[in-house]
Image (cartoon, rainbow, N blue to C red; front, top):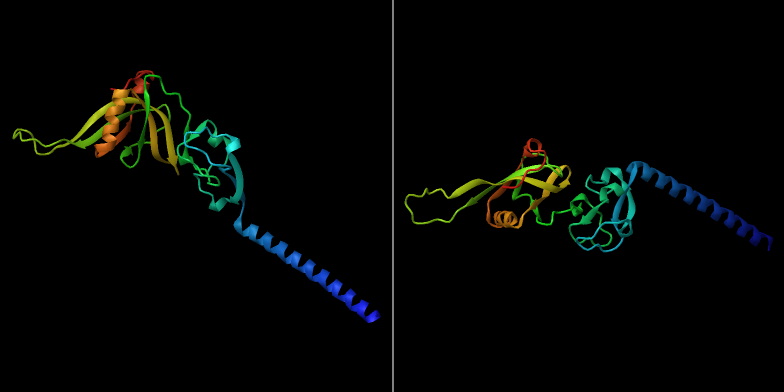
Length: 219
């Protein structure tokens, strides 16, 4: 009877010792793993499905931790980055939010329309920021006719609109992927035609906003 109790006592002590050793080894492994990953950063993910065009608020979001070295510059890491933004596309639950998914909530004048100029068809010759003004040059090919006096080269590049106000700019890793410009309906129709059927739409920053005190009008 005494020997049986002695064995139970020894086995209990050994079990506790093994458990403590395992806990120590596991804790040490976690510590080493964290050290190898480096510093962590919080990034924002969708807490639930976010429809396109929805204002981004904290109720739509949650945060997760990930190593800084794996976090892209385009990830949304702070509330300032989604403040006064809306979603450009539907964002499913659990998706990491990126700069390219969001755009500013902007006030478009009542007699204007917002038109998005997106790369690669739109080419941006300079760094552009909201409230800048730009000139739009379009390149396209005209229809051929039987007039012998007309040149055979049907390719055209023209200044389509000038001094157009930029309302928003979307960037990814400091590279412009699209801009939103305010256009009157007839101007919007011309630009949309170029975007659909043209070869290229080149966006060139204008200094007319400085010369005219920021009151320029699109051509």
